[in-house]
Length: 472
Ligand SMILES: [Cu+2]
Image 1 (tube, protein in one colour):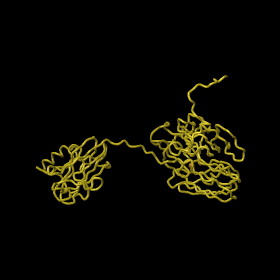
Image 2: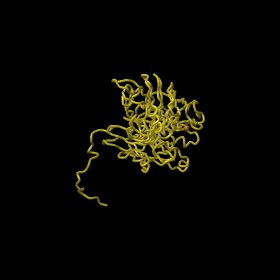
Image 3: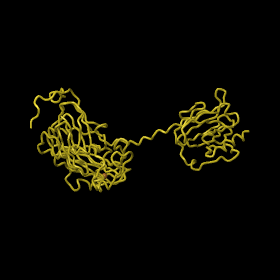
Image 4: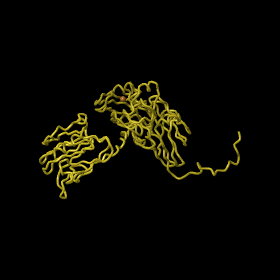
């Protein structure tokens, strides 16, 4: 009778996989259990262990480990598509097995305390399926439960780590002091990060963020700069600083392979706001992938004080798939050679300065933005919608008098500008490159200004027509 019922199950189990678990001292079934070669290679994505035992006077399966630990005849929750592995352990000594005939799966019998056996099946259909012991009378005595297969939750694409530097992450003013020696340690880090919601990219960075760290010294300072290339990098990297007077701006002296570290020393001879970047060939590729930042060399007397300072850089990315593609975007050398970027970004990623790190200030505060273009190729027409720059230190020159009352300022690739503004009216102001098509490719930032309304300067009309129509 036992043999007959087991045979019935086995005959029905055309896809059954019966894999003995260690220590497997299970007695072989009366006829060989069919195996599925493909199945035996599949890695289980849901695993359960059930121990036979007695509970409330009944013969049962008891969950062992995980969410089912200690539960009597637990319901095993899995997802559609899971490769499910169930191990049965003989807990009390009587002969048992476990079978799911509807899923064409049955284990070997376990005989004697501690014996175990494992079955594996694919949960291909959504629904509820009975498991039970096929030994005569055991199911009726209590050894039965359910496997519930639920719809698979769609896998969220990997969002990636943030590579966007917070624009308020910059050093404080140098202050009143004479020239000193300043040490900076940079590290070239290649990392997959968030380019957009649902889009990632294999960025190359200085210190893991875009832009790289802002350095801030005084004219006359001596800078000792070390560049390490991370152990797990694939590429060579270096650094070329536009504040440096010397061959390659330091690039040759700092070329480092993975795991290497090199340093060089330079004197900050001229005040200004300067871009730095990696200059390893193909240079434009290294820059586009995120290897740019700025160094501010303050004049002897320092800069006029302001209430808030921000650090923003613009760049563009050349990806194989169009803007908006979901998943990992690959670099496209063809698009780069044709100067056809898919993405334009402030601080490395779409949304970096809107959802992630918007700029924040209060009405009437003096606001300064250190703005640079990493590029590598596109000039920015930098503008903050709804404001006028009080002062623009064009081309990052801090020794020339600033332009005043400027709407939009041109910033070259590998160039910078320092702009001062005040915002008397509260609201959300938008940072753009006024080549506004680029807004549709990710180039947008937000300056959120809080404070009392200022109707003298800005207010809504009452809907009536003007008393004196405009004459031409
Ligand atoms: Cu590089």
